[in-house]
Length: 193
Image 1 (cartoon, rainbow, N blue to C red):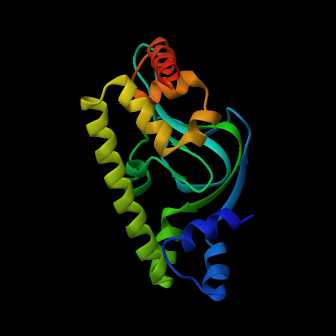
Image 2: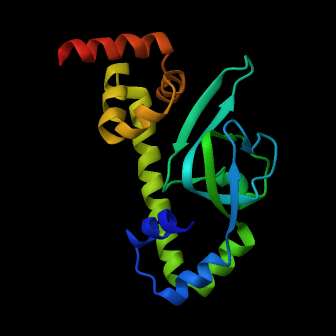
């Protein structure tokens, strides 16, 4: 089970076998079936979760009942309502499985113990959070300045696997466009090739 997890960590920092064995003790393994919730809006997010296998989506629902996807988490990605996880406040996001998934979860208290006991993990998470901040900043800029075609093209170039595995209506929601607009954009791009 921890293959993708350690592969991801080792892309950023170096661990010895003793550290790996200690890290495992802090995590809980969980399986989610397709459409099963990891978190619901209004709950307290008790875990920071790593996707070992499968695919999750994080989203909120507006007053009209429309889902707005803010993130997908494939294998090798983390998923959480970070604000709720670190503050203990109610979650503003839902997180559920798009595909059957296997995840590794850590509580805040174990996260803090682990990063104190294994300092290299503190560095790993600092790198992770820095990268996340840069990605979110870019996503915000993209949402207000790029055309629908540019948004789709950028997503396709940066993560073609996501395009293949996620239903088109969810891709449209993530890009902040309608499914009809996404269909039109895809046809334009196909004609240009």
